Length: 465
Ligand code: FAD
Ligand code: NAD
Image (cartoon, rainbow, N blue to C red; front, top):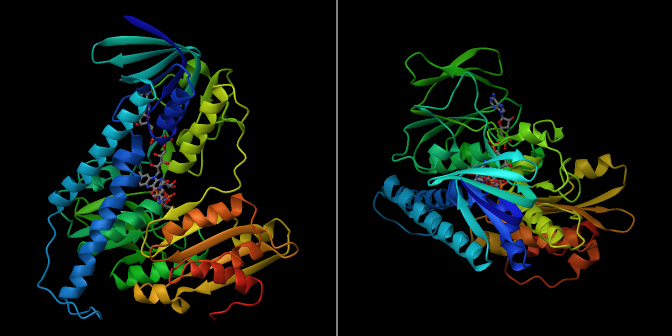
């Protein structure tokens, strides 16, 4: 049995863990990171990056399919296109592979020692790792738990065979003829849209009365409209019950209480993710929990001295950039710097068609604080750049305090609006007022002019509407 000691041990090399280890290494902290799979975690291997690669491929295919169908107003025509999903997936795997190597290289550059294998706590200062060459014992002054999350399985639709999670969906060899998606949240709609664009007959089964329940109806309306245009059937208020005896259909109770059967070659279950809290000795260290998540304070400290937790294992929102920001903060704290969680906003982007971006408070959340608010909304149908990109659906909305015009929240739905997330977060983080956004020159012609116009609208003098 081999033993090593270090100042900082990070368990899990997802975006939370690898950023924490890189920053700690940069700050001169003697750091070890343990990963059972490949560097980059869920995000890089089976999450954010591969899903966006597949979504991009589907967008490209759908564009040329419309051209081939003679539906393209730009005057471009071509013969019937085909998609070879094996090649698409190989291209996606190439991107993932390059990024795996990149993360490993960055860890090395920061002088972080990487250990491959499954880690398990012996006690609050000692971890055992099952490596290919035997058990490695690691003693550390500080340990960061960054074990992430895994897909939620429904007991009546266990994963296996035709019932798949996002991980298998991102590695399919053929586009399914008929795809049933259980759960109309982030993953279900991002991937459901992509498969519909690639030619699958997609049905989304959502238990709640509407899709993307995290967002307000106004924001999700353009997404619902586009799903309809793509031929996706959305069944809301519907509860999946299981597979048909032959395994070729999904059984569900529809909103009207009637049982329905949806023919499906594959059933993609995307009903949320759960924190990865088992199999690594949580019981040995008995940390305080908040529901299923590890409880942390504003420095990501757990209830045990010297043990921190970051990322999906600590709760919502389960987003890669939140995990990274927590990882960076914890590295600074371990290096002796004074830091705590003081972020004003964690932006969220849903890569549907059109995309949805939110930062800060929604109008409803702002109202619930009891503050009087002003709202400015500007439609992309009045934005020149959006017209030239055939992306007139959607809008930008700014929510501000009525008294001093401090911006509380910004939302947008529209084609390509994910890239506006940076401007939205920056405005909120820097404490911008409506006048700051309205008074900033926004380059023409860009969709970002819609942001400036939304602020102007809230001030009562929009120029282009
Ligand atoms: P993870 O990325 O889950 O990494 C945890 C790592 O720890 C894993 O590599 C695991 O192997 C390792 N590990 C666990 N236990 C042990 C152990 N005992 N020993 C050794 N190693 C261990 N988020 C976004 O912000 N934007 C997106 O567009 C987005 N798209 C997504 C699409 C899909 C299909 C999915 C599934 C998720 C998506 N997410 C997205 C969410 C994002 O992937 C997660 O929020 C993020 O990966 C969480 O990072 P993490 O570091 O907490 O954990
Ligand atoms: P989700 O929470 O976004 O959506 C799950 C949906 O399933 C909800 O709408 C819920 O009402 C529904 N649901 C739950 N049980 C159901 C049932 N039995 N039958 C039918 N519907 C049911 O979860 P997800 O889509 O699995 O994604 C998991 C997490 O991954 C997200 O919460 C997010 O944090 C992260 N993610 C982020 C992005 C992004 O940032 N673009 C993309 C993908 C995933």
